[in-house]
Image 1 (cartoon, rainbow, N blue to C red):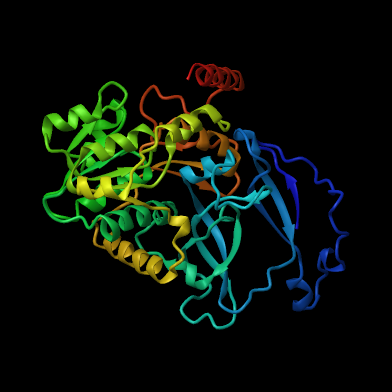
Image 2: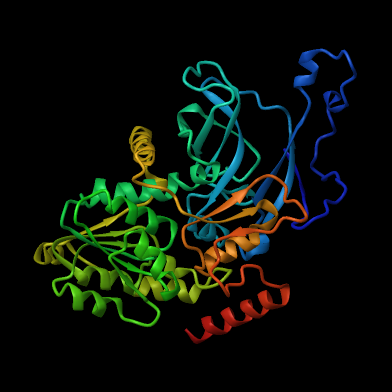
Length: 425
């Protein structure tokens, strides 16, 4: 497979042959009228893809045009034309070299997407050409066409958009398994959800609403409080100006039953201290490690230095549970499938609905990553494979006054500020 970088804005340069690119096959030539169907099938397939070329800043994710022979589907595989892809915090970590599940660069990122099946392999009985599906993969979804196992695809409800389909799998499976498989949420329980305006936060809030009389404390910046309150957060807390531990204690002196912690470091210690007896802390991330575009060794060291340290005796004396969750390490495909079908049923019933924050074309991946990195989003950030039209602008739910697109000069100032902050920390 060879790759050529496409521009991140409007024009596309002339294709240049890479040194390691094989000579074109005879079947690459344009087909003459009357050519055999077999020869037509061998015509090379070109597709746009977002490729992580190395570890570092936003510029390490580049739009490329890949050319390959027509995929020869194995038994049980399907070819999907991708219509929308999800952007997750894991991709921000992966860009910095902090996500161990991602293969080494160069690699096409992306763990979830939605699209239309264009071809099916042998032994595929319950999928057909034209089906609208959601698909999951450990990587490789950020491209126009993808070959996946039919078992990793899920039929989309008729009323579901491609953007919603791409927003559902990672965030909602993560939230569902933590709440119902690990924490066993029941009526009358209380829960603290950090980053309540993010993809997992909104998914967890909606799922909590499916259980009677659950109290939700959610941390988010003040500008997002109205939105998350409408979505089901009982007590929004501005983590930037207030101590969320004190705020929770004012309302619930005994603390909470469940804490969902994507932050790590000192926040994990605070979460454990907030638990009631028989409470459960679930750690599923280390967002405190990500403070700038590039890997920050000082922030990583600080996070791990402040990490919660326990032994079994202390747990026994505290009568508390500490769990860890990482969707990438769930290898039970039957469990994942069962969870997805349950979530799709909840969607059909109108009990859950992914909130789409904004949509960006592949050319705008830098803006998409920046929006999520700076925690401006409320809900899911979506990437769209099809080329951007020149007159088209990014579709976003940005709040008034928020600047989604920034100039190159301001971006350089941002990087310099981040470096200064890191040195001070």
